[in-house]
Structure formats: C-alpha cells, structure tokens
Length: 236
Image (cartoon, rainbow, N blue to C red; front, side, top):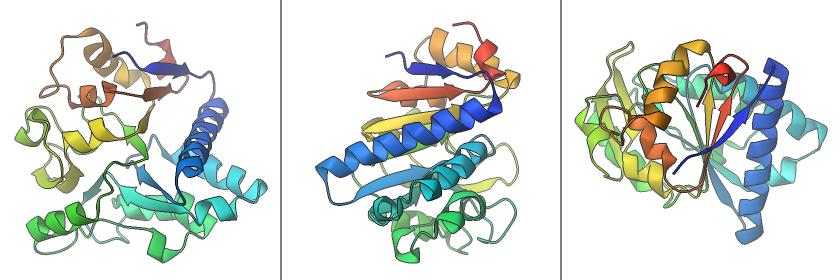
C-alpha cells in the first residue's frame, strides 16, 4: 500500500503541516475515546514539527486536549534520560516541557537500566494495543524506530519491545517491534534531506523486503509520509 506523500517546499511548511496533521489525528482519536495514545519518534527530523506543535497548541489553548493524550516512545538509546542522545530528553525540550505535559501522562522507556532486557519487558507491558497515533522517522538505510536492516528484530511481524544493537552510535537501544507499527491506527513518517532519496526509492519502489528495509512495515494501513523541501525532490 502506497502512503500519502506530503511534499513541502520550506522548513516552515514542513513543521506546520506536521503539527496540523498530528493535532487532527489526536482530535479524531479523542472523538472515539476519552483518552488517546501518541507514540513519539526520535532523531532530528521530528524536532521542527515538535516545536511547531507546541507553539500551535499554546496559541490555541489546547491544554484540555493534551490532558487526554498519553505519550509513549517508539525507541530509546540506552543512555540516561538527561543525556544529549536521549530521545526522551529531546522530546521534553522540544514538545513535552513547553506544553507542560503531566508526568503521569508520559511513559518513557527506562533504557538506562542495567538490565535492558527487563526494561524491554516492562515497557512492553505498558504499550497500548493498538497505538492511536504513531510518529516515525526514517534513516538513510531505510531503518525506522531502531529496527535496522539485517537485524532479526526487523525480520518478523512480532509485537512487543526488544533490546537491539544498532550499527550506529549509541549502539544499545530499546525499540518497538514491527507488529506494533503495523497495528497502529494511523502513522506519520517525518523525513528530511536529500540523503533519504535512496531509502525512499527502496521503500516505495523496491520489492517488499522489510528485513532489509524495515521502514516498509510502515506502509501497512493508514500512513502519511511528510517530506521536507530536500526530501520532496525525490521522484516516485
């Protein structure tokens, strides 16, 4: 299934469209239930969207909406939560802190634990089934979350959370498994840079091979891929 590609022409448009998409998805989820779940992505591509999302939410006085949103994470590096490489820290600085999200509504991965396997099992028990709104990114090698090409964790449609060793620093990470992605009610992938063109071709034009292109798991069901001005020059 091909995703809905949102091509943008500027950083401002990329951040604005991403923020509007997330708010609309959350609002739709909240028409069905009293609360909903939002799973955040790590890396740098989401940060402009997160910052704009915080700004728009404050401008529109959406505190009541955010009080009903429970925050989860798709992956985390095995570093302390105040470490510069921590996805949790980045989310706190760009989105959760500015919005004043209640701590009891934020469910972070305790990836700094000395027993990472136990930390994975504990987070797996907290996972919503399914995630209402999932945010993801994509690497130059077509990885998503911390599911990397060739890793057994990316190869099978299993649910839950696993400890993986990534081919890039910091290597030790916790990540959701593919079935968590495929079962999410709706997804937004945020993709930046011309360096992602090869991965986009692999994911969208290549054969179905998620063990080697894990981002293809995000093609199942409803999926929107947001491309910044550089990624938008990709020709499908």
